[in-house]
Amino acid sequence: MSVQMVLLPVFVLVGLTFALLLWMASARSRAITGREISLKDIALGQPNWPERATQIANCFRNQFEVPLLFYALIALALPLRHADLFIVLMSWVFVVTRFAHAGIFVTSNDVRTRSLAWFAGVLVLLAMWIYFALKILLLI
Image (tube, rainbow, N blue to C red; front, side, top):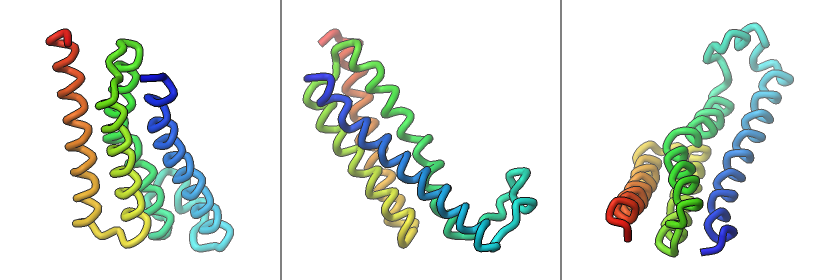
């Protein structure tokens, strides 16, 4: 697989993370300029942001949990030349589950549905790691 094919899902997921970062910054700025909150209320990291800003921030923060295992896998698989068609296809499936999870998180925030999207992503990522580990350990 070409480097571009392997890295494109990574770039898309990084794009989602930056989009959420900018959205969070905008929501927080609006909360401050709209006087929903004062700087002293959050200066020491207190959880006093309005609900909507917190919802977006939590979704952003979530991009640094399970996706880190995805980034690590790609960072290992690419230079070791084990990023094949299966890894690329599963990368796209994982990215789709992350978009679904984020979309649910910032809209309805239905925990049951959000959890299903999260769990689907975890299963895909687990399959990717098992596949990668078996290829490395069995030298296939």
